[in-house]
Length: 193
Picture (tube, rainbow, N blue to C red):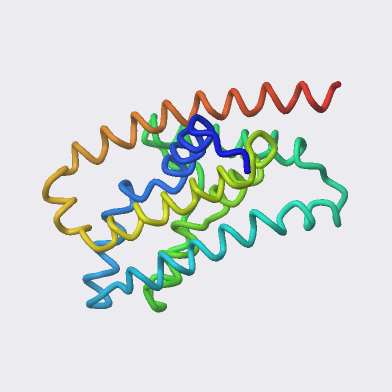
C-alpha cells in the first residue's frame, strides 16, 4: 500500500469539484419536493459502487477498444476543462437530461449526478497519475460528503444561500481548470514519449 496524503487530497478535491454536490443542492431540493423523500444512504452506496467498479474495469473496457489510459486521460482532461469553464463562467455547455427526474430519487442522484460521465472520466484520468488505493479513499471521502449533503440539503441551502453556493462553485471551477491543464500536459507528454 502506498498511501499518499497529497494524492488523496488532490484526488478528493478533483472528484468533489467534478461531482459538484454543493452546486446540485437546488436539484436535490426539487427532487425532495417532487418525491417527498430522498434515500440518502442508498443513493450514496450505489454511487460508490458504480465509481469503484468503473475504477477497476474502466481500463479493461478501454483496452478492449484499443485506447490506453493516457489517451483517455487527455480526453478526460478536456471534459474537465469544459466542466470547469461551465462552473467559472456560469454557462451551460452540456445539456442535462431532465426526463429522469420522475424516476426513483436514487437514480438521478447516484447516476448521473454523482457517478456521471464527468466523474467516471475523471477516475480514469486520475488512475493514470495516482495510486489506486489513494483514489479509492478519495471516492469514499466524496461519497461520505455526498451522503451528508443529501441528508442536510435543506439546511445547507439556507445556510449558504444562493450566493454562497455560486461562490463555492466558482472557486472549485478555477481549481478544476488548473487540474485539467495539469492532467492534459502530463499525459500529452507521455503520449509523445
